[in-house]
Image (tube, rainbow, N blue to C red; front, side):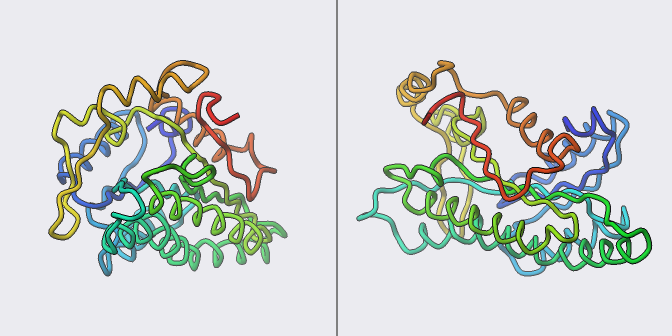
Length: 256
């Protein structure tokens, strides 16, 4: 939505796991009200065919893909000796496999368009892939071995894409967010959860833990969603046209 306000870009919104369909449509309506175009694709990105549907929907609507933000995900915490195989695999699936498959599927179109532009004009116009990582993936985190491993893996994917596709003027960067106000860091007393197979995964943090975490951030607070969006906008914009294969930490000074 931030990008739409400033640049009137076209947007295609996928949803991971199982939020209500009306949430997806609500976001699209907000984008349209700002004067941009939006197409909503509702589905679980870990399911067969959903990624292909997303890519084809974007191609049908806009005849191209300029920017990808791999942001689907959730946490399913547990100490190492109690982490189940399902917990482990679920984090790898949504945080590593899904971004890879989406990049691979969209990449066929992005590379083909870039090659055509290079043949005709000598240079491809800029395209951007942004993978959302976490400070847990950079520094590790107790109780999050599965999540930290997956979010670390996305950094390797980011650097590999940057090296392979830089020749097509496709930049690939990652952002490692710290504590941002989302449903993953909200008050868990609300009872919000998501369904993963037959398991119900509770979301959020205890209020006491929220206060503790905010104290380790030099800015003494969690980041706002708009501040997270600002980092995404910066790396997606021409102001970062020579930034490639980089991981930007956005954590209010934590971990420095």
